[in-house]
Length: 225
Length: 225
DNA sequence: TTTTATATATGATATTTGTCATGTTTTCTT
DNA sequence: AAGAAAACATGACAAATATCATATATAAAA
Image (cartoon, rainbow over all chains, first blue to last red; front, side):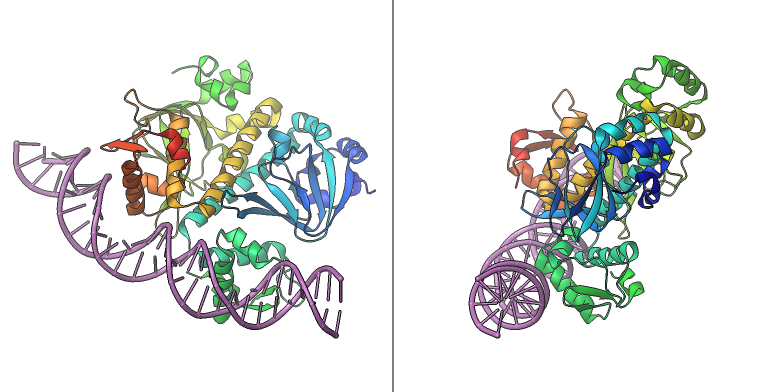
């Protein structure tokens, strides 16, 4: 099993602010896991007793609504921490996490890392920064949900996924989502999401090869009204 | 001017975790302000160089959408801190703050408090907890916006305001909002908000006296579909 | 490969919500 | 107190989105 001190991944998240000694201790108690595409990492309401550091892959964080639909609230990729909030509040998870492709994660028990949070101000300030960033993003999503059309929201989601998670060699979006996932990000019916994607295709803003989506006109997508 | 060490208000926010010495220092550099109903505390895009501790009154935090509507994202009352995020990230404010009634606030310069955030782990952990709570609420709002009807959202907003901010002696909601404010919380057109309020009135779930709203059937409101 | 299941796609229609028009009430100003 | 301005209210209609039905394509299983 790899050592945290030498792990490159931590450069991308708050763990980089831990001291070498702290990292060595964390390294000793972490467990490495492989998670298969589609499987659940944790459930809504589950008590998390630790955080996950995502070494590879991507997952979606969603919450089940009363109408039976799963709203995707955030996506977490390679390099980021998963379940940060559970470190701070003692509540159970508000969200469900599901792997969107095969993942590799390290699980760090809460008990080991909570002391660092209390003692290492640089680390806790980093976590604070992350959380502040997430909060800003969440506020922006609220505004978009409330004030923009499905077409605008979907166009923005495509741009976001393109810019944040990149593309395959053939130019298609590297994160492969079902039409239902797109609907659940945007907060609409699956049929509506499909319809809008067809429309964007007709307008030559995107093209599709099976499930794969390729952005043909990024600037155009950003201008969708 | 009052002294922070003796101020009761701080019991309700993270400032309670500061030591006596820290509070005395803060007390020496804070400025007390009265803010009139309707006036702007800070604008979207403005650089905040401090936090506000709300001693009295209530304000709304909103963000202007491209379609010209102001989406209300959060309300901050007596006892809470305002502009916490500006302490952590060096970015300009993502939201605008407007007083909903006459307010009294203390402004604490960032320079004075940032050191405490770095040195006093109990304080920073408290801020972290606050932020984690805000993030959870924001996620829940996203789900509601995406998956619930205007009527459900408005009913929930009324319940939320009732439970969080209380009622006047005559039973009307103590926070007085315009119909436009309600529309901007729920993310709908003002006319739609008015229409739904009329509907809730017909269903005897609420009653109105001018702008004032009284909840007549709390359980009923919670059950709105 | 053939069958079966699942995901994608599209039409028809219903429902929800937004927009514009217009009237009424309340609040503010002088 | 009178007039002006703003907020509230409601109808009529338009636009956006959801739902149901059904067809086709793709992927999974036998």
